[in-house]
Image (cartoon, rainbow, N blue to C red):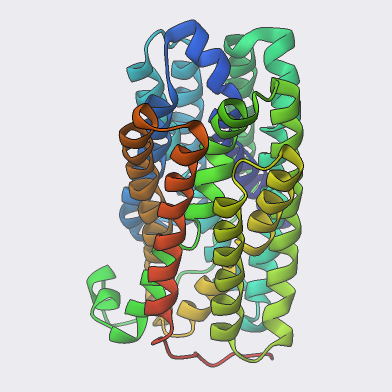
Length: 394
């Protein structure tokens, strides 16, 4: 089981890499195949939307056939196949199709780990294990920052993608060999994701889940590269360093929020407080959007640090799930998290495209960041009406 978890976590590292690497790839893709920021925003959004759409069948598969086959097969076909298609791309459409396929491949890996944690470990350590998994996985963001910048400069973006194809297929194979499925739950009652959606207690939590990741994913996953390039004329090396700093902050945030769940009785307080601080950082980024690279880096790092409430939101919702719907429950949360992010990321490209031709670069990005702030504010308002679940510590 432990070896299997290791390879599921490595698959999640690759998932984090794939959702963030377009920010660094953007300049090279623009030169070689004419993929502009709007094209890449759409491709990035489609990654999240496909990822989210897959959560319903993934949840069913986890409960019915287990995490081993679900994760390894999808990661090999979708992740490996999508990376290969990306390496062969010659138009922005090819990039979008590749990202959609990679989204399919990445869709089960984190939830497979969470399913095993929920079924095989004590409830008191779920958030800690989930947070550690997220923290380690976020090293994929680090790999998609300065290391990716150097790899693209040395080997070209196509050569880099072929290497990533091989790495993805190897991890999928090892997951198929080492992951072990938990014992199945034997229950008489049936159920589906519709039973979970019919629970009003989950609605405010789902609303928060839909927007909590947008500032982090939107900026680190795509916009930080074009923002630094267009506002400050930053070099690829500077962009690589800034994304690296933000990535390390995201790692730290994941390692902080998990243990915090065991120290603070109210998960609602943790989630709401973290997202309000994140909102304040986004508002400061709007105010100081054109100030300097240093100020932007500090604020981006703070957004990465405080925007890691994902795992505590899942722990909050999990207290209300029937045991036999655990797989469908965690994937429902992931559907809202990734689906909301994908939809909003796609809309962010439209907002930028509408404002940019008529304004300066600074004003265009202030509108973009304002959009992220409004999304976070709406989620926080809805989440105020949530009810704390029982925070089990034994």
